[in-house]
Image (cartoon, rainbow, N blue to C red):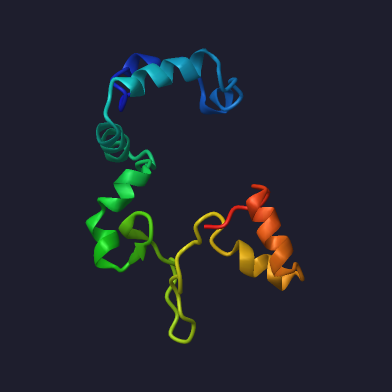
Length: 139
């Protein structure tokens, strides 16, 4: 209550009763309005300085701008045939005897259609027919 700038809310409800309130109820609305007036960092700071466990929600764009993740090798650079130089996350764990990361990029849609169909016994002629009919995409 104090962290959100509304100390007057403090005596209205005991914690056990608050936990039974509906997710879309008046208490949730009141708390939501209190947080809406703050930035993410302001909200986390206010809560943390008052002893309320809190952590910021991290968006995808935040991750790519995080210097700690870059310094600790979280990302892996690779070349993509359509989009050029790209960066993506690696595995979070590093083990001395188990390699991490990705040995190759994700395939483009249809990139390996011919090989996959041939592995499943389709003839070259049938594969060509499927591609010509538009039933199979070849990248």
